[in-house]
Length: 383
Image 1 (cartoon, rainbow, N blue to C red):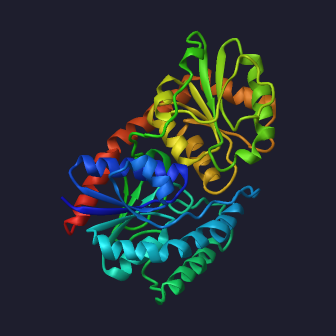
Image 2 (tube, one colour):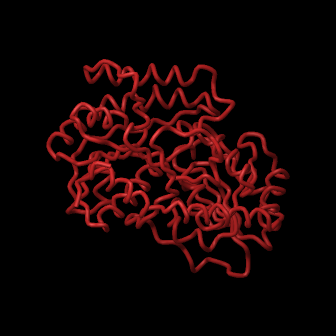
Image 3 (cartoon, one colour):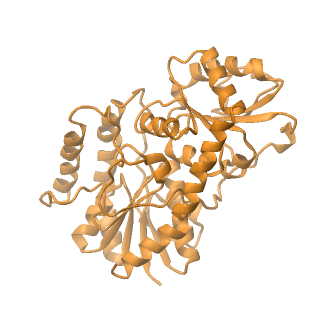
């Protein structure tokens, strides 16, 4: 049995991945402790889990779009968050004395704390922006990110080690994707593609199955949890796009209450859904391109229409389209007719579902939670 300290980012997709990995480690007999916001972690990991609290640093909504929003993410959230958690993470590593610290790729302060304490650490990559930077990335972006990381080194009172990129542990990088999506893109040293790691989600809501029409096909529409304030116009265009298909398709829209005034009777709406329970019943997903949503859908062989908004989402949309498992559309300018065409294509053209199933097979071959646990156990044992 080894001791693992998991430090997730307090955002839904990142928490889901870390939670599933923690469950897999615990099921394999390892001891798992957590470091993060207790208000986020306690409902997920239960009353008896060991948590080293950091306090809560909230994500502030912003209106940035496209790749430029990546810099706002760093300056407006990631750098303040990492300055905030640096001391609590350092104290947790010192007190818990883990064999390995498992660090969300963006919780870089925890990796730095492990480095300072001489503890091995692994990076958990839940997105694509840093792992496989797109060819159209902002000029000078990597150098700019390095300058931001230098601020975390300075906060810790340490000189920058040019051999260490805090986004990628020099010991192990676990990427929750597969070669079917990333293709032949160069990867960081020590990177292992293990596919999505999925587990139980204790806080999932119930779903209104009594309203499910088994005689129609089903399409889920979601823009994740961080961009709902940008999506009212997109919701309106999606409903206009789906109205002509209402006799054959029952959409499920995940959106805040009131986001769609007077929803039509052919539409199911919910503020949250039990995603892993719902996905096997779906015929397609329309989403923003968050890596969590995309890989969860593809793990079930469900094709996608991807309307990327910002951050790594354009890169993820390109990967989905490149794999043939879906269609990329413009979040801001795709017309209702464009969206009708895209949804109809992924529902009726067999090639999209066949490609999605090939990606699902690649995820299975990558190993998921079992592969991630094996890599972490080997690292803990000195491998």
